[in-house]
Image (cartoon, rainbow, N blue to C red; front, side, top):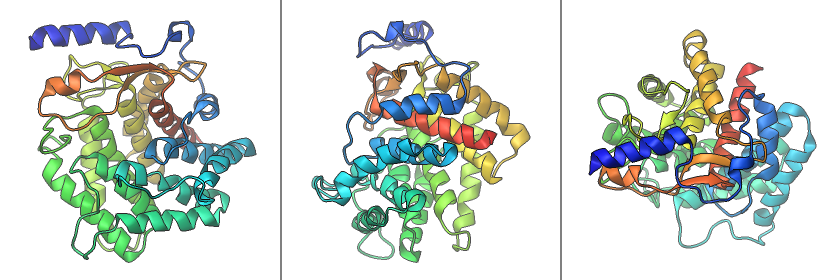
Length: 351
């Protein structure tokens, strides 16, 4: 049974079709070979379609703010700030039940709006959201944690941007704890104790969470340097599994698994930022980023639709659970946001 499933998935990946959930994408042309800023403009114009309180649109808003800073084109900043104003004005609640880290992580864009556009109201709201995440005692875990690698990004992206000594310590403690329990001997991460497989986006969340912490936590923070070996070990492990077209797979270490956009975008972005920040060697890793970027651009069409995006995924007990997750081909806020992140990081590196 498993052999037939893997052959079927491999055929889908080679055909580049997977499970289409939007019509008309076969007429769009992939943006292979295009400049990252050109791709970024296409994605920034299209996403997010649903400006809800979530990490997904937040990545697009953050990308729009950074695109404006890179190009001097204010339209992208204005587009992001218009969406964010719904939350700072109170029209749309930023903190609402049921509390989930995936929702609260939307505050990462509020912090960026303050940092990059001087939106003080957004910065204050980011702090309020960060405080909701904080544990009740100094040694406790971040609230609403699932135990999945997803938490590493959702919590660290907000707590590091709003860092006080307590918030910084909470972010560092979560990353170290998850790395000790979920990182395998080979450097890859399992998704969760109840999801003991190297899910692609789960590895992307782990790497990007550590990347965000290293980026935003104060250099003087005691223990911050403990995170750098974790970042380097994970990068070295992921590089071994990069496909010949530059992508990473839905299950990173499963050769029969299809080549998935979000893990490719997140990994490419995190490695590009590591080169820019001097955490890893440029000569060694820039070719990997360049191949990763080509794989991302090949999955973005000229109309902003994307392909090979794993749908929303919880923790599952079997590898087949991850191999069988529905695949999105078409307009997709998650895939578009993560491709935009990769485009911004690669453009920043090349500058």
